[in-house]
Amino acid sequence: MSDKAPGEPRSAPLERLAMFSNAVFALAISLPVLGIDTPRIEEAGGWWQNILALHALTPSFLVFTLNFLVTGLFWLGQHRLMRDVRRYDPAIVVPTMFLLLTIVFLPWSTKFAVVN
Image 1 (cartoon, rainbow, N blue to C red):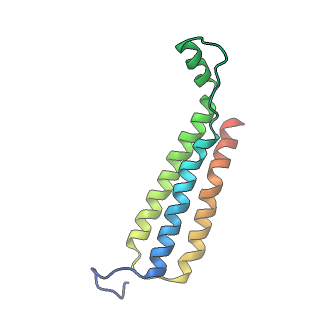
Image 2: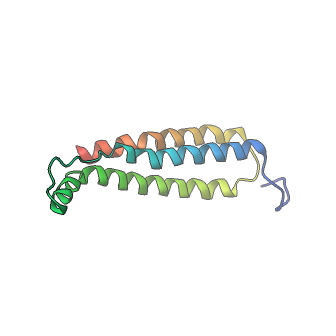
Image 3: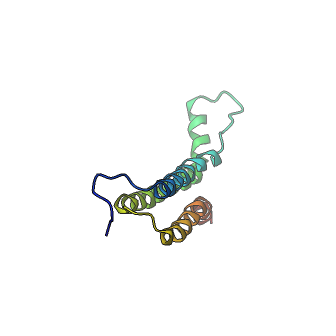
């Protein structure tokens, strides 16, 4: 139960935890796109050469898309949870850090699962 009135702002430590979590999610959802190689086309083969080069990157696009969707779902859940928290309690820091550890590890594990 909350000690604060419904319109009263949340505590600074809670806001810092929410902002830190959002920053980790933002990095985890956007940085994996840098792992997709940009194809180099040696000869002027036209649009078909471009299609073939992009088709060769299908596993990388799959990894990125799957990672984006899964990370986005985790963020939605965490966002809903943090929205309902009204008072800072140090007990929520450790579970939040374990969640963020999982999120940071997610791009690698997704790539490992798709490639192998």
